[in-house]
Length: 148
Image (tube, rainbow, N blue to C red; front, side, top):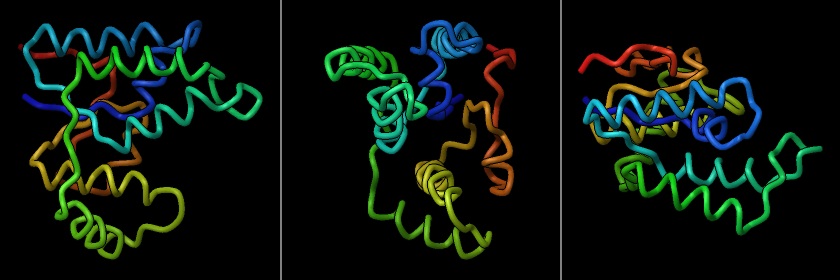
């Protein structure tokens, strides 16, 4: 089984004291122990960096570049980066028109497009509604059990 891990799970996994930190870490660890392939997209990594380095008073974590780099390097050692291809853009264009996507959800549509392009049907996320409009994608809450 293969799954993409959404940005929110990545962020909560490194956000000390967050109520979902343990669930986020455990969700990734359970899947790794079950020999699942866990993918992350370049967009997720860019969003992760954005939140990690943004000041806390601007809804970020406020990490230094060095600290964010250590955390990102650790995640890259655990997860497989699923790189963009030219087909991701055309799939994204198709999805945003087909589903009438407007505003901020265009970012989730891009994640969905990359997943569809690469044939990955599941995403580990705290925001299942962000992906429910894309019928071929199954959102999985981090607290869900792993069959393996």
